[in-house]
Length: 103
Image (cartoon, rainbow, N blue to C red; front, top):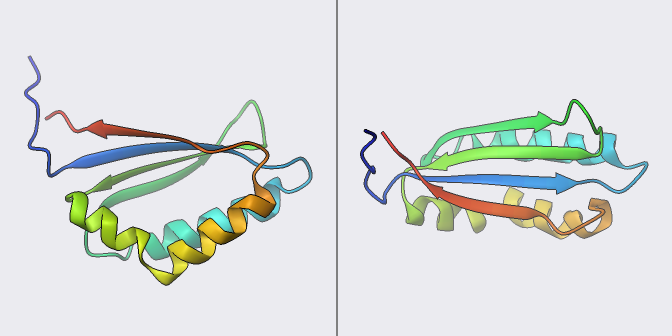
């Protein structure tokens, strides 16, 4: 039976759908964001995926050492820039889900 890890290991799954005609631009912005985020000290892992069934749909999987690391991430200049451009590129609001990591 899996044991719940401490609450200091947080995972997020973010599913986003680009506007029609903007998926390539959105993917490039996501790739830059993921590359910069991976260098942050509290980032355990971050991965970018594009749906194999729908080129407009993107998913980011990320794990953070703790809530403070994630809070620090949200204050980084690259995060603020990305969030600001999302409105121009997203076709629908992002679906953000938070999970506790199981060992």
